Image 1 (cartoon, rainbow, N blue to C red):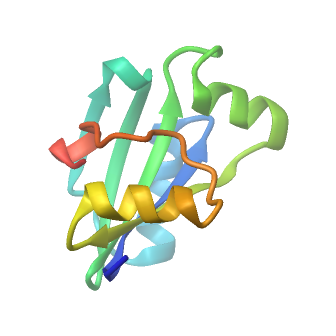
Image 2: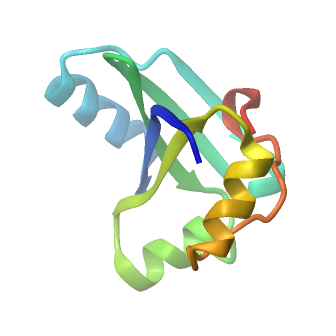
Amino acid sequence: MELTHIEHVGIAVKDLDSAISYYEKVLGVQCYAIEEVKDQKVKTAFFKVGQTKIELLESTDPESPVGKFIEKKGEGIHHMAFAVKNITQALEEAENKGIRLIDRKPRRGAEGLE
């Protein structure tokens, strides 16, 4: 699996607007995109920090994966996304190494990324 960089770090939050204000102050950068990903039942906000992004995730449904994550664990780091040369090969290799996958096939997320 050829990793090129950390694409983004996803942070689950209860209130996207409050979290945007907080992270703008802490990071010293402005949120550059807000998007709803309806099939994943989340609203997202993005910050660019060097080559990596911070993605804030607010659940739009308490039964969504992010909603359940917050209920069980509270706000915090939800996931880390790596950029790879070949996504299909990387998923196969990760599964063969025993890494627990949410998806076994690429799917579109926020910013149209797979």
